[in-house]
Length: 163
Image (cartoon, rainbow, N blue to C red; front, side, top):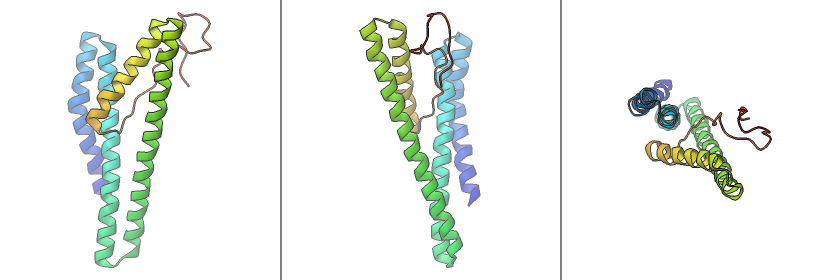
């Protein structure tokens, strides 16, 4: 049932394009980088949500169709899709937990060292997680902040790419 998977991705892209695309354009026009990045992350996250939903729906449909038509291949394909969709959900939640923990740590460290930039970067990322999570029901995809201050950075004006 590949058409169900594709429909999920397309549905996610449409919703993301409407909500996230609009925000991204507003952020770009007003030169508010946070709003632009939030819009881009919403687009990515809704596509991920659609992909997961499509894969789960496809798996369920394959299992039902295989059971009705007595075709074990359909049932096996359905099980594979359900496992893969479940794996994406678990992987996404683990990544989200790491993101929240790391940024919370950055906020605490920034408060301790009185580094307002580190506090603000951590708070912005947590704000994005909250906003995107509310829209996409937990399927969150955020690109790492390229301007994030790393612990190995010697000069405050140098930018290092996050790994």
